[in-house]
Image (cartoon, rainbow, N blue to C red; front, top):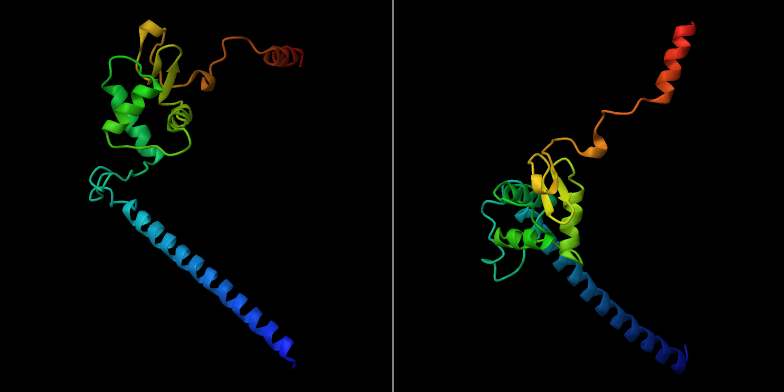
Length: 171
């Protein structure tokens, strides 16, 4: 082996050692993230919520709330309200309950959660969100438990049903 080849191998060895150091740092970072995920999972495990510190008690870190908790809290808030509430009003009320949303736009996240729960909430245009089951006459909303788009009753006669009836009469 020539001196030039030996120097090239030593250079390559140093390069590989640097790459190993970078990979070891990355591995340590991954292990730290795994520890954080594990700790977060334990905090959010069933039954762990009662002894979990609030975000205010944990040095200002925010605990992200699950949609089911947001739905339950929003239902409670609107049950005690005397009028529909805007998204910003609901966001403030949820913060007062120490519940936080994540995402690029938490208000949009809340709107999405509420709109996906049509059986519970209704968005009364120009008034805000309200409980579907509660009436709000000022907005023309009569409380009901079935969203309009899921109502099975059909006020108009179905032409296919009429045709079926005529065919049965012929036979």
